[in-house]
Image 1 (cartoon, one colour):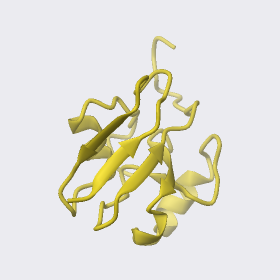
Image 2 (cartoon, one colour; image 1 turned 180 degrees about the vertical axis):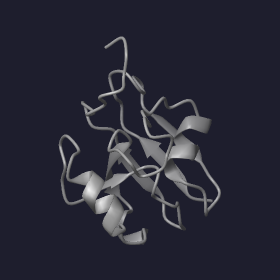
Image 3 (cartoon, helix red, strand yellow; image 1 turned 60 degrees about the vertical axis):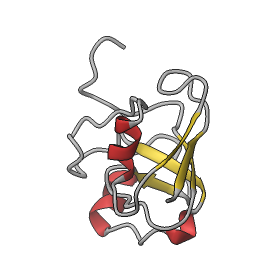
Length: 112
């Protein structure tokens, strides 16, 4: 089983986290199931960039981003070459080290 390690994030995961997941699950679902409150304003339909994550380790094990995902990533804050949308990443065989960017461009978010 691959292991997902989430680096500490001030709001979503202050202490960081690590957990095992089955292969074939979407990263966003795995994060939410394990108590990581990652934003996902479009309800995981690849229509926004709020679930933007940076894959610090294990990026090469992932399938390539689709054109739709690339289009949405262009709108993400803090974009880099290892950026992905958690709603589009299917966990494969490798462990992943994930960084949730400090900011998200969420035009629908209330209370912040």
